[in-house]
Image 1 (spheres, rainbow over the protein chains, first blue to last red):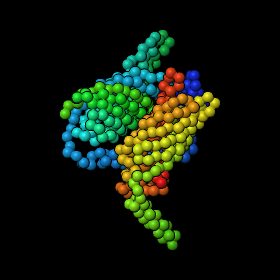
Image 2 (image 1 turned 90 degrees about the vertical axis):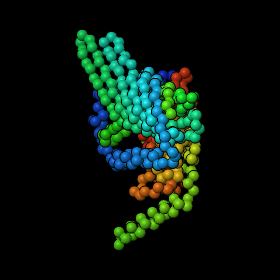
Image 3 (image 1 turned 135 degrees about the vertical axis):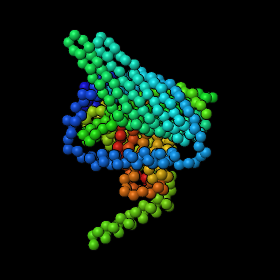
Image 4 (image 1 turned 90 degrees about the horizontal axis):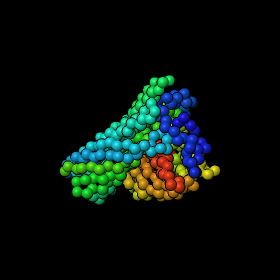
Amino acid sequence: MAIARLKNAKIGITPFDRVSQTPNLQSQPIGIMNQANPIDGMTNLLRSHLPICFFCIMYHLLTPKEAFSLQWTVASVAGVMQQPASHYYHAIYGAQGALESDSSRIVLRLGAFERPVFSNQGYEDQDLGSYGLVGSKLTQSKRHGLYAFIGPGQIHGYTTTTSLETNDSRRYKLRGSLFAMEYQVSISSFDLCLNHMQFIGSFDNDQLGSYVAWPFSFYLVSLGYRWF
Amino acid sequence: MVLKSVLKYIIFFELWIFSSSIFGKTERYQIAAQSTALAPNAGGQEIYSLKLSRTDWEASLFSNQSISAGNMPYTGAVLLKRFSLCDESCFWQFFVQLGAGGSNGGPITEMTWGTIIPLLPIWLPLSAPKFVPALRIDITTQIVYIRWRAVTWTYPFWIGISVPI
């Protein structure tokens, strides 16, 4: 069960064995973890601050400090994804498109990915996701540099078991926030990027009161083409 | 009478913050202490950290009581390079950090997306006021290199307090 306590999980020859299972997000009994909630104030604080956080980032990025011109980028993406409470890396692939100011002060990006269908002896599963990101270049070099992104995302998927005894199908959908950093090298009109993203599924008061969140980790390589 | 005293206190306090924002150096050390991160399991992660940072670097000590390496809590130290989207010259700070270090689980690399949010109900678009605690929230990924494996460990919403000094 993915909800297994991390306590006493071992780092060693077989690290984190106790949590190395793919979670079934649909059936997590998170709601019953509701307890005396000492951090309702924290929930409210986070909720009230998040819109201001987005406003501050947008204000910072959009304050005109340069002559504004735009570039388009399209890219193919491949890499690995790690699901919450799992220590397996699953291959994923996808595509993304971006609109970028001339000095990369602001980048708007849309992307989608999927994990290929796994199918074996009547069992089948798949994950898919999409995201929108707003970000900025943090370093000064023209031809390479580090970017930071933040934005909303969504991951959904299904598991299906078909056999003589059972015919079970389950789906999940998780919306949340993505936090990403990316190192990019530009050669002519081509961009090669190394990317790390962390997707955190949105949580309600019960989950926050129990300190529960669903983090997905991504390590991606993308190759893109840029139109000036 | 009491209300008057409270108001007087608030006005003096805000003036002090305002003056420290104006006259204090904008590049300053910050100390942060964090104690809890969310996790996919109920109860989250009890992970303590003490961090000292400047505009472009951070040194961090941490101890994760929720997992163990050998028979000890997973404990380590990391030195990080900080890239700011909005540094301590902003009242509200955003940054990412990349770093490497060691732990009793093995060598580690760390990637952090962090923000330091003012807690005071005032808006000073100048700089982080000195000595005034702010909420620090990190979204951190650590990669622990254990023999020939690279194990990813995440800290979604690692929460603590940051104090500029």
